[in-house]
Amino acid sequence: MSEEKKTKGLKIPTPWRIKRYYMYAFATVVALVLPWIKVNGNHFFLLSFDKMKLHLAFVQFDMQELYLMPFLLMLLFLGIFGMTVVGGRVFCGWVCPQTVFRVIYRDLIETKLLKLRKRIGNKQQEPDMSKPENKAKKAIAITIWTVLALIAGADFMWYFIPPEDFFKYLSNPTEHMTMIGFVIGVAAFLIYDIVFLKENFCIYVCPYSRVQSVLYDEHTVMAIYDEHRGGKIYDEEHHKLVNSQKDLKAIDPDAECTACEKCVTVCPTHIDIRKGLQLECINCLECVDACVTVMGKLGKPSLVTWSSEYEIVERKGKTKYFRPKVIAYGVLLVLITVILGFMGSTKEHMLLNINKETRLYSVKKLSDGKIQVDNSYIFLLQNTENEPMKFFFDVEQPKDIKGKIFIAKPTKPFRVVPGVKKKKIVTLRTHDILVDNPRKDTIIPITIHAYALDKDGKPSEKISVIRHSTFVFPKESMLKAAH
Image (cartoon, rainbow, N blue to C red; front, side, top):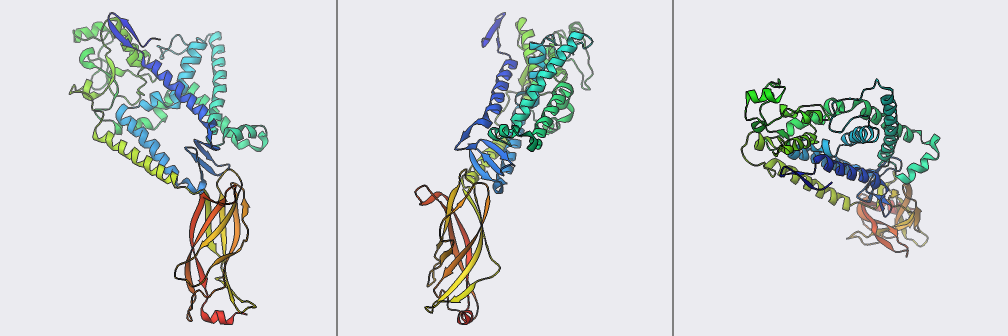
């Protein structure tokens, strides 16, 4: 379709409905393709309860790093709320999966493919199910949608179980009934929702329609009927005043509305936009397209436009898009994104917890007369990379200490496979008199550097963490009692 066509000299732009179809196609392709894209073995978004991993922006995080999830949720909700302040329920009409699925089922399958519905422009008239051929078409439509619902259910699961594992698990279904149950459950809900519940989900079930009324202001952009040009169809109590153009002309001779009610018959949520602001409106702008077509044939601009009450109803001037409330949402979104990016960039590529054993130390006198003092620790570490790696430790020598602390056990680097927590007993030792204290044991702060070895056997700069602990050196009496 060309971008513009002319009717009686009036330029009519491409319908919003067509632009929405482009948006739906884009969103569908992204949702289906994104789980398959990997960078360095990591997904864009994957919350894997199977492997206890979070992938975000192609960076892998361990479940212990789920402190990032609240920031993701804040971005999601603030983004939707910000969209609502600016454009009303534009999310519902242009992005929401419920709307996308309904358009696929109602407009594509029932109307275009099977001709069960007469035309896309009439969403109020339901098919006559008393006819046998319509019953057969309905069964075919539900069958087609069932297949698509199963694909949608599988796609949903791919953000929790990556596709490469999902299809592997399908080959052995008896051991993965929970996964299969989730897919079937999601598909069953989508069949009931899209085929039977329909737009009643948007009107009665979805809590977003109740939240939006708090977020709106006089500059919020939405589908609005211009009562000044079109004439008054409803009173303040939403009682209908006229039923035809003749009745309207009798009340207001200058009224331009033709009372064709194309804006009513095309509405998926079955409202009359001429009543004013209604919670059921999802800003799909189908009513705008309908009125553009009708009024365009008369050489006049549409009576229903995507604008604000400030501009159309109150006629105070142009809509203000950059107002304090919108700027505040923008600042919050940028701030949270920066915080999320900073926290994600500082992730550690290995997890390590260090705990001392219950025994503070052990003391032993060597044959050469030296004293050996050991402190033992439990190292609990995890390789968060995608391949097995070798790990080892160093002790950074504490300042203002006379002798040296070194690792007595383990003596060689050890192998750690991904995703498995490894418990390692580590012994730190000294042969020197670190502190000369006759009265009490001395707690010496120490720094432990844990790292992975690269392919050349050298310490990795990327997979490296620093942990702080303590080394307990015995008092003088304990040293003298050693044997």
